[in-house]
Structure formats: structure tokens, C-alpha cells
Image 1 (cartoon, rainbow, N blue to C red):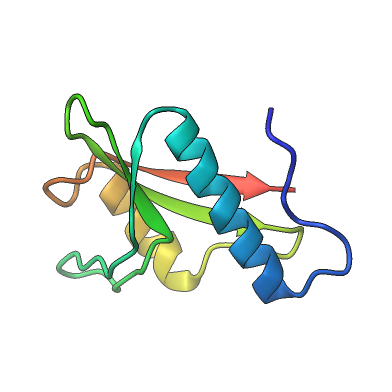
Image 2 (image 1 turned 90 degrees about the horizontal axis):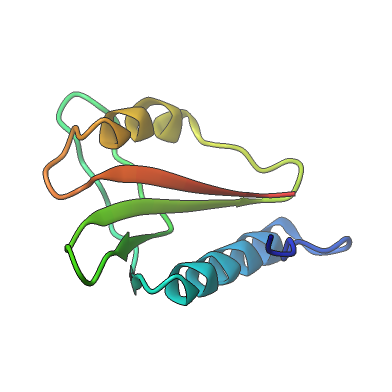
Length: 103
């Protein structure tokens, strides 16, 4: 288990940044390569900008990463529509979506 990076008294922005940093550290500790965020477009679905990607150095498999930190954090309307499509292989080069839900 990893301790939640969100602490009482943090602003929403601070919680988001802390969650993204902890996510990156966890991904790299598992031996994956962290790749920076960029817009994902799937025809017929809203664009999303995930927090980053994890790439398996052995296979090249890529995963979309998103971090949600704190009790009020949730997925956006666009994420709720597009992430399930990406998770089902709806875009070449993306294997799945991994959400880090920090309490």
C-alpha cells in the first residue's frame, strides 16, 4: 500500500499535483517508464488529457494514467465517456486506463 499524498488543508490544485507526483513515483518504482500527458482523441468521443502514461520497457505496452486525489476528486464528464473506450482498446497503442484513486 502507498500512503495517500493528499493532506488536510491542501488546496485542490495542491492535492492534484501531489497525486500526480505520487502516481509517477509508483509507476517508476514498478519499472515502467513515465511519459508526459498529451491530448487523446477518439473519433466520436470527447477529447481527454490524462495525467500521463506508463510504458512497459520490455513490451512497449502503454497505459493511460489518471490520478484523483481527495474525497471530492472525480472524473470529468469527458473522462467518463472516453476512458472506457480507451480501456477497451479503442485507440491503437493504448492498452488500458489506470486510475489512481487516493483517499
